[in-house]
Amino acid sequence: MPAVKASLRQTPAWLGLARSAVSDLYPRSAPVYWADFTLSTAGAWAFALVFFRAAPWSLVQLVAYCASILLFFRTGTFIHELVHARRGQLVWFGRAWNLFVGIPFLMPWIFYRNHADHHNAQHFGTPQDGEYLPLAASPVRETLKYLAQVPLLPLFMLVRLGVLGPLSWLQRGLREWVLTRASAAVSNPYYAKRFPARDQKHLVVVEGLAFAYLAGLAGLVLAGRIGLNHVFMGYLLVAGALGLNWIRNLAAHGYGNRGERMTHLAQMEDSINITGQTWLTVLLFPVGLRYHALHHLFPSLPYHNLRKAHRRLSELLPRDAPYHTTGRHSFFAAVTELWRAAKATPVEQSAMPRWVRSLRPSRTP
Image (cartoon, rainbow, N blue to C red; front, side, top):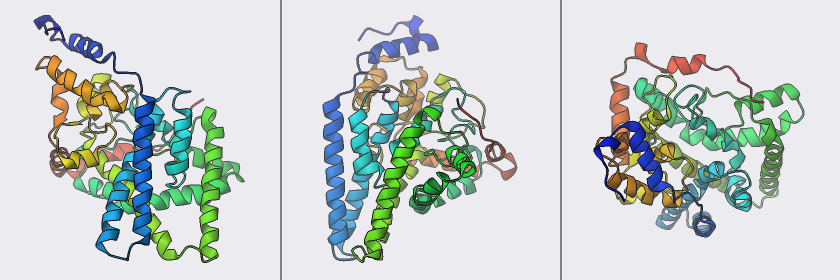
């Protein structure tokens, strides 16, 4: 790596230096993707089987449950890699992911197409960003409302794919509402944007597969092959895996923006890299999620090269480069910062009303 000169200590210069430092890290390794996904998914389902078969409330069942949701969380995180791949890339990987994770967990990866808005300078940190809520610029009650949704996440998807999906095929008005308000994987409940027309055929296919899956499960329950206790256990698995990501998301950003547009570099500065090397970091931030600021700086970098990229940038960039300000030692440090900011925000100064007022559908061609 070349030495950093004083003349490079301006924002455009350090960014150019950063781009050069990671320019060789963009190729995706198919063997890495397939090996990680296969091992994580096989382990998740194996522990899930133990969870279903173990004695109720036993230590074995508890350990199997925890191991299963952690591995399902890991393999589920590949949805993020899928939406960042160029069209035509990872096609069979996406199909395999849907088969073993997306359909069983009622979260086909196409629902996450809206993630592009999260990287768009016109939308990031605004009410039009499906993955941003101004939690640090709103009272604590907004963070508590956010967390209260965790046990309801599987119910939302069950209603969406088991009820609203098939009914909307029969009623055009309902279909438009579903495509605008209930066809995106978001944490911002005020997000409203029409599902892209070019992906609607894909959406209908996965809706049909998910409905067939749910109908099959219902048939097994009615036939007495599956008990209601097993349905509840399955619900707990889905809630646990989705809930881990929901909680992890609290440490992805500072969440202090009040709805104004942000530049590409401002997005990075609002994002967080978790730099601690603890077992909790490994479990809560799989598949590169710990380097979220780096991801917003260079969104196309594959997850398996983020650690190397972060190490290079940490060593190479000048000490006053904004990239260095994005690090937090742990999940708890990031969440504590958010919590303190929320506690210091009076109700009358909350940024959340801007999100509530924004609930107007926008259309995409």
